[in-house]
Picture 1 (cartoon, rainbow, N blue to C red):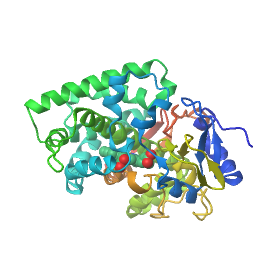
Picture 2 (picture 1 turned 180 degrees about the vertical axis):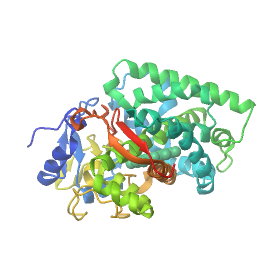
Picture 3 (picture 1 turned 60 degrees about the vertical axis):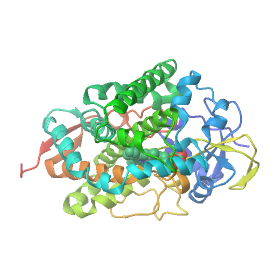
Picture 4 (picture 1 turned 45 degrees about the vertical axis):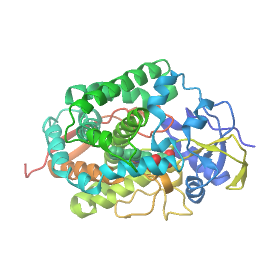
Amino acid sequence: MAQPVTQEQLIQDPHPIYAKLREDAPVSPMQMMTFSGRGWVVTGYAEAREAFTHPALSRDGNKYFGALDTGLDERVRAAMNHHMLNSDPPDHTRLRRMVVKVFTARRIAALAPRITEIATELLDAVKPGEPVDIIDAFGFPLPIRVICELLGIPSRDQDAFREWSNVIVAGAFAGDKLPVAAKAMTDYIHELLARKRTNPADDLLSDLIAVRDEGDALTEDELTSMVFLLLIAGHETTVNLIGNGLYLLLTHPDQLDRLRADRDLVPSAIEEVLRYEGPLRSALPRFATADLELGGVTISHGDIVMISPLAANRDSDRFDDAETFDVGRGHTQHVAFGHGLHFCLGAPLARLEGKIALELILERFGTLELATELDQLVWRPSGLMRGLAALPVSVTLAASR
Ligand code: HEM
């Protein structure tokens, strides 16, 4: 059997490794950083879809997280882990139903003017002619401000969130910082919930406190975990959608020109960014609750399975010219937002933010160029995310401005 792939190998340049794995075995052994048992990585598209919906692959973190050595205190772990992405039906069904009641399509669509306002304000601060890290100046602050405002988190606390969330997403790569950040963030959420209980406002947090399902409210751990999930899922990924999107356009100038010539292609370009260099290298771990067959291998009860949307989305059995970045490709049923029960709840918000961000950048800047050498770009160390640590660019304003 081939040597298991390690997480470290996959950070800087995952695609050639994934391509080789996919060709050799679309379900291959993988060495996990925080799990001593057997791990697998799924790189084929068909196998990824099958794994996302396999009844013997559980996402119930509370039953199985004991197997992962995250070094977290029990109370902090409970306040972070009781959310829908960590549960199977019927808990998952109940938790998702309760959020869907308040996280409605109307509420998301109504955010468009405010997203445009925040994005415009951030871009106003970008000075033409001087190199700027567009992720720091725009890619990060936009989604964090949007999700914080949606939830009702005061703007003065948003920098702290950015810091905690960065550490938490780095996971095992963050070492000792992880338990400290996780505790700080859950303590903060507890305090915020207490304040919203006495002073409800017109925000998602207040609505989540009030929401009932067959008479039942969310428990305190479910509430803190839900906020935790929405905050982390709600911005870390979208940062990478914006960052990876700009990186792809900068490194594919023909596609950037095409988009400038036909702005109607923006939604299709967003889908292609999601497919070609999506924000998540890996979905969350699945735990095998029984022996099962997947992609020609036997996965045993107790093994952990990591599904890679990044790899699956480049499967040439599913996508013509899978290795070509083509902004006109359109919607392709990529699995960047997952598939099945846990399909991303925030996909409409992420698409809206991505579209507004890209449209405003195209409209405002006449030129957009990389202000560093390609080989100087560093990808953030994370077991799950695929995103650049920084993206220095230089811009000039469009003639119309
Ligand atoms: C481009 C941006 C985004 C990407 C690529 C993305 C991707 C994903 C993926 C792959 C999953 C499934 C994970 C799994 O099955 O292991 C997921 C689930 C989820 N996402 Fe997103 N996401 C994005 C943005 C957002 C935003 C903006 C929010 C919320 C405001 C959000 C909230 C969620 C939630 C709550 C779940 C769990 C759903 C469930 O368990 O039923 N995501 N996302």
